[in-house]
Length: 427
Image 1 (tube, rainbow, N blue to C red):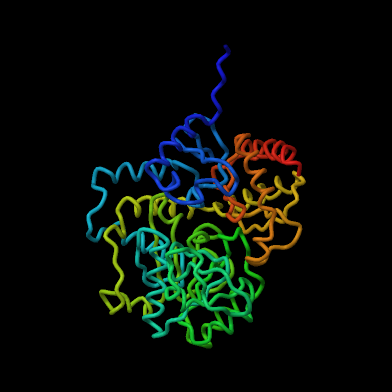
Image 2: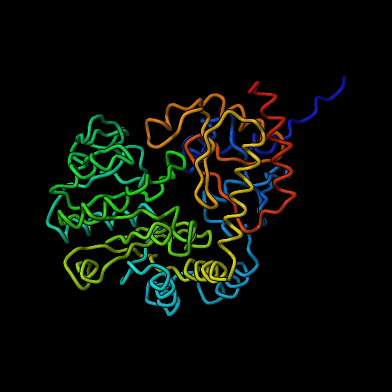
């Protein structure tokens, strides 16, 4: 009898079956399970430049970029070289290092709104510190956030549902208590009037200056400036969550792009060069509330990790080179054009080298608009792209990213793959 050929992702299937026996859902972060696009996950073996290879040896043009950090491409030789040199000196000390000073100096130089910095080991941890600090500095409890805004796995911010200008937070994950979200006020993204009302008496508003976790949704003209003015008027702090946009849309993040200064800024992803890292910083008088200078406690055993700071410094050095952001803008524009030329029924939101093709014919300006998209069609197209050697985000509600490593051939592969995927999906 003829032997049935193995499926092209046989090794990934085998690994997923094993993973499900020892890891919850077989993954360490839910979206990696690829349930949003109706398939099992691919297990990645290695990455280089604009490409990743799965455990079966199949190569993909990567538009996920590790959810953003791979801005200069995977396995950037400068980053790899610097980390290799740092490894023999130890992986963690639990003590201050020169590298974390150099790292903080580089961040402060890029972000004029940041006068003092505190490093963490993740973006979620940085958000927790920024929110706690805002409450300590203002003596207030309420935190305003946008519906659909994701700020890490923080209990008090895992609230999205709501209607009207301002609602009390309703937990959206079991295990998050009503008390944890009772001081969270929800407003629609890009609704300045709702935010202005909610900010009254609040400690802070935390906002993605360019939403990236409902898909890419840019701020409406005047929105960020209006939030800044409302905070100035009420004494609330403006926390800009630039975990995705920091060093991505400009060297000084969305604050540089839109000319708005935060009281507190949250950073992550790119500043770790692919290693786990987070940071938050802001005006000196606010940051001075943190221990050991002030009474607001925040700490982390691995904060300022020497390998993470080494990798982050290498990436920030790369991004400081002349023409880098022009190149990223060109890549983002090229990606947008390929998707438009395909005839896909999409509304494309793009800022620089990050974009989302929403499967809808209507403008997407907030969470309600994003969630009205045809997620089944997106899933079908994403499966078709994976089958043709292109790795997109495994969810309609995530950003696509371009790196400085993407080349003409990569966009050509996408053009061909997208045509086949659309035809297969009947779009």
